[in-house]
Length: 205
Image (cartoon, rainbow, N blue to C red):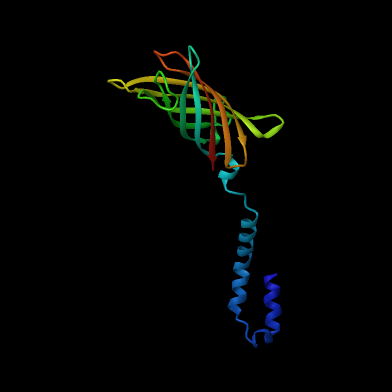
């Protein structure tokens, strides 16, 4: 097509006031196919790999209540953290998202929001997201966490190993906003096990 263009316009030199630079025709012949190929490749290229990989990052803030056993006494439980899904973990049966979070719990004998005694936990976790048949609005997840809990309010800070297992559901408003609802089994050596019911907001990107 470029060759026909040059030949036609060389024969009709009035188009450019009688002068058609041969270098222009040569340039079109040499670089025209390259430009056309580049435009076709850019128009038909796939989206970025990150968009197809299904990976995402989450920032979550959760509010809940511990039910301490025995007695099922309520205690404040606040959690904030971040998580990121990894494509190479998609087939892992235990989890596809690695998390890190901080949790504050009221460890006093009374009061819901705060007392002089606190339980502060930094934990890493592995979360497994899974779909629920018949709906895309709600998905489920399991979440295994392990970390260190520090008890404050005494003469010395006491550090203990923390283990938590959660089962939850995610209500998706869109790709970036969701609500997490979960129930967690918690165990710290030297104190009775307890459960936590939580609900929170998550921002994903």
